[in-house]
Image 1: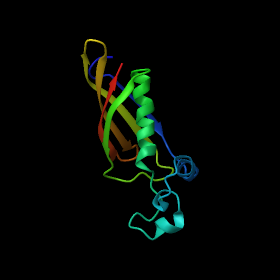
Image 2: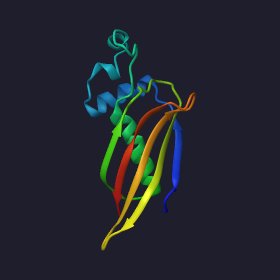
Image 3: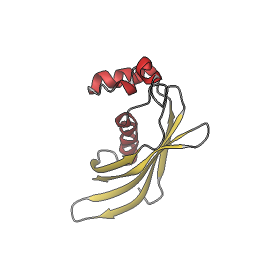
Length: 129
């Protein structure tokens, strides 16, 4: 993989996906799965858990660098992701460097709403092979 290599997918999560993620991960913050609770917050409805978004990005990294070990991942979530919103997940190789025994890949990570291009998650990651 060379600098600038990019892969992306478009994916929408359902409320059932939010519920399943909360159950499987043990993340029980009702902001992510309880419509009744969320209705009383500033967001007004459940929002995707950041780790759910990060897991999709990690899967994309693995498509670019199969079998790579995640060394670092740092992301921010400036805007929430809601159920049934088509989102574009993008992973871009920013740099590849070669050490004595392994290659290091630096990635730019981004999630944006398809409808209006608003970035809902951004950050970076590093993988070694």
